[in-house]
Length: 106
Image (cartoon, rainbow, N blue to C red; front, side):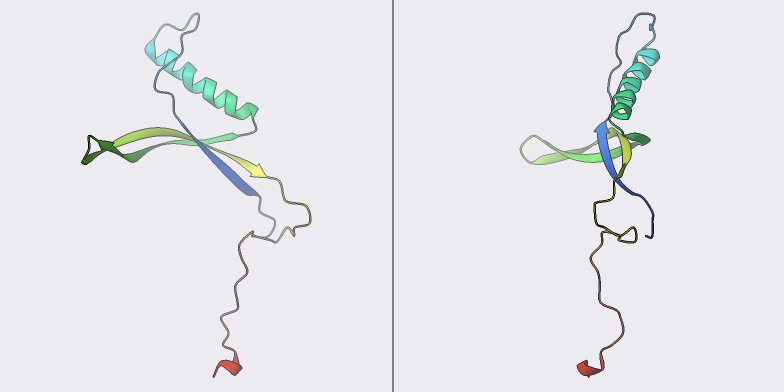
């Protein structure tokens, strides 16, 4: 992974309703304003918007059954600063043994 930046991710629920504001009359405009608020809030905290997704979520319905609902989420990322004393070539993954057979094992 030599020199590649490492990232962390944050996934937040997408707004389900808009926000009223002066001059914004349509439901589409209010909804867009609600999404804009979330994007700007996350950007102020150093997060970069990546994408939105719709994912299935299984939820209980009553005592014995469940149903699948679909949730909209917004995905953000930000670069993780390298830890002090780590090599730029360190991937953060545990080191593995080489796949070469040891003659002593025979």
